[in-house]
Image (cartoon, rainbow, N blue to C red; front, side, top):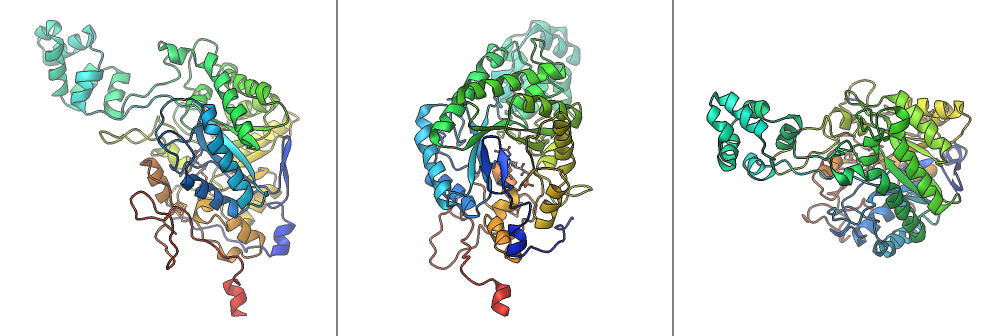
Length: 492
Ligand SMILES: Cc1cc2nc3c(=O)[nH]c(=O)nc-3n(C[C@H](O)[C@H](O)[C@H](O)COP(=O)(O)O)c2cc1C
Ligand code: SF4
C-alpha cells in the first residue's frame, strides 16, 4: 500500500505565486490556472443521452472548486442509442449542453474553462449464455462440422443438421469449444462479441475513415454553438480512434500498419474539426502515452503521434495510459467486457495497490517524454498530465521541472471538488484526500451513478441531498463552507 506524497500545503500567498495557480495558454484561450479536472463519466445522462438536473449538479459541484479547466465526460458523436451516455450527435442535444455550460460558468464565477470530450466507439456485445451463443450468434460453417467430427471421432457430424450441431456444441466444455471455434468466435463466446477497426469486411467499419472526420466536425460545431470553450478529441483508451493509432491496427487501406498510416485518420479528424470551427476555438486531443498491453503502442509511438498532432494544430495534448479491452477481465455471463479491469486498466486509474513506483504521478514520465518530443520539434503545445496527482508539492514540482504544463486530477477532484479552492486559499489541510482504491471506478463499471465512498453516506441533518437511484448514496459531495474558520484558525 502506497501513501500520499508528503509535503506541506502552501499559504494563500504561496499559492497565489505558484506555478500551479498561474495562467496557461490553450491555443486561442487562456485558462486562469494550470489545474484541470479531466473527463469522468458519471452516468447521469438520460437513456436518450440528454443532460439531466443531476448532471448539472455534478458539474456545478466541480465548478465550485474553480479549477482552471473542466473537461466534460466522454460524449458520443453519433445519433445512435448508447444507454445513459451523454451525446452530441444531433442538434437536439444543444439546449441541454448549453445549460451545462451556463451552470459551470455561474458556479465558477466565470473562472473555469469548460471543454467537452467527444468520442466514437464500436459495438461491444454482452457475454452470451453459451446456449444462446450457439443457437443464435454462431455463423455455422463446414469448418465447425469438420472440427466436431474430428473432436468426437465421428464423421456423421459432417452432414448433421444445423440444429443438431448447435445443440451438440452448446453441450461441450470450454476445452472442446477451443478446438472447434476460431479465435474470434471463442472470444465472442467467452467475452462477448467486440467489433474492431480491423474488421474491414464489415462495410460500416471499412467506411469509418470516410464517416468520422465529418461526424467529429459536426460534434465540434454543436459544442461551439452550445458555448463550450473548446473540445477534447478522445483518442485514448479502448475506443475507435485509439484503436486506429494502435500498433495492433493492421488495416491495409492506408489507415493501418505504419505509424504514418495509423495516424492518418486522427489527423484527418483534427483537420476536419479545424476547418469547421476555425482557429479561434480550442481543440485538443487526449491520447495514450503507452497502451500498456502486449503488442500495443509504446511511448515512442506516442511521441510520433504527439508531434504530428501538434503540427496539425491541436491546442493541447492530454496524456493518459492503458485502459484497453485486450487484457480486460472476462465478464460474467450477461455483462459486457470493461476496459479498466485488467493490467492496462490499472495503469489508467492506478490504485494504492499498484506496483512500484506506486500510483502517485506514475504516468509523468510519459507526459515528460511527449513534451520533450514536441518541444524538440519546435512547438510548445501544452501537455496535460494525469494519474495520481493529489498534492500541491508534487504538482508544483512537475511544473517546475518542465515535465508537463498542466496538472489534471480526476479522482482527487471527485473525492473533494473544493480541493483546488482549499489549496488556493491556504486551507490545504482541509482537503479530503482520495484513497485511490477505486470504489468510484467499480460503480462506473456497472454503469451506476458514480460517487465517492468518502462522502456518499455523509448526510447533514435536514440537508435534503439528492440521492442515487438506489436511494442509498448522495450524488454530490457535501458542501464546504469556506466562510467558516478552518479548524487550525479555530484552535488559535
Ligand atoms: C469514474 C471515472 C470515469 C472516467 N471517465 C473517463 C472519460 O470519460 N474519459 C477519459 O478520457 N477518462 C476517463 N477517466 C479517466 C480519468 O480521466 C483519469 O485519466 C484517471 O482517473 C487517472 O487520473 P486520476 O489518478 O487523477 O484519477 C475516468 C475515470 C474515472 C475514475
Ligand atoms: S471512491 Fe475512492 S478512489 Fe474514488 S474518488 Fe473516492 S476515495 Fe478516490
